[in-house]
Length: 105
Image (cartoon, rainbow, N blue to C red; front, side, top):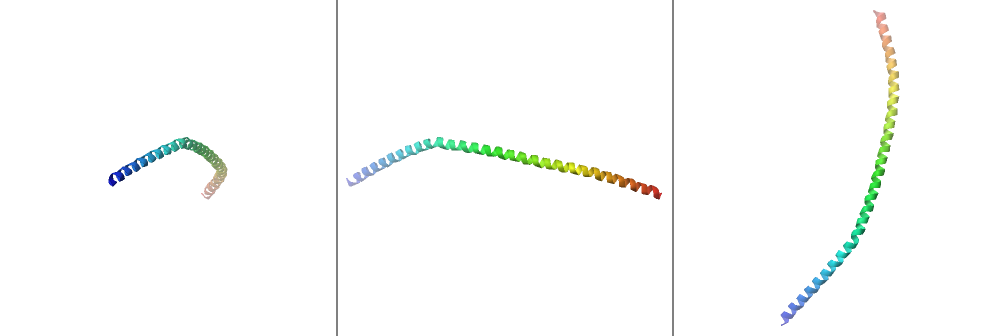
């Protein structure tokens, strides 16, 4: 008789535990369902922030590229003028060298 009462009491405790577990599961699910829109909104905000940051970085990269390009063009023009001057000097030297050779012959 004591065994059957203990068994019955144990079964009742298990039923109560199952009921409590089920209630907790329902509460957790409700909590997740409430949090889902908040999580989605936070995700969308972060996505927008990252998009803005990416666009800003892209614009900065384009601006830096333009600046480098402009600097490279200025250097090219400067070197081109130097080359013209150098070519003119070399042409003059070549003429003088040819003149010297002609005179020596």
